[in-house]
Image (cartoon, rainbow, N blue to C red; front, side):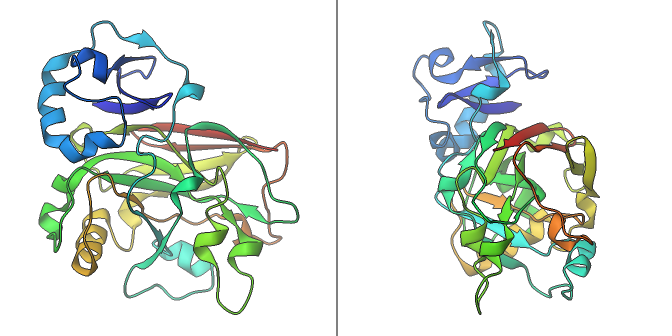
Length: 280
């Protein structure tokens, strides 16, 4: 099942992504239109959705889609979670997850125009993103995937000049500018994937591929991240986890390469779809 945010309303999207059914209308008000509120009653929604069908689905435009989990209560991001990315960053592989946050005001939909800051060094970081359908404390690794509502695609866009300035790096600030957290195009439930721990992802700038990886190479896979995060604090339904990026970022290149006005960044995740950002 594909669940989306169409102009602020919760929808179920057809398999080909061309059309969608409005959930509030199709359920006669049983479930509301707010895309984020559905995660608090995810089990009931899934049970209803399996019998609801897609009759009456209306065509949709990708540019009308928003982040599938807008304004989550908590948004976690994981740094240095691929060995080759840690190596290209000149940092030893971490023994524990490197956790920071992107503030929720940066989140946007799959097709956007992003305003670049003056004098910055904006970079790309394609990532698998999970949204929780059930929270909790001390979740076991063996149970972790059952707490995930679905998988989506994200770009942890990063303004490197701001992120790395000063004696203490400002990771969260440099990664939370307006439009620096595109997500989507929709949320795909875990049952749609033969192996959710091994998916291909990547991105291209102006048609040139700059990143490609497999999520099987995550140092801390999704179940480990959920177990470790929930051991430290309480997770909530609708929480979002950006799981880290594979190698190929611009700041690690020789010479360094950053996004500039006129560039188009196209990102993909196997079994989910594409993001498309144009920079101005």
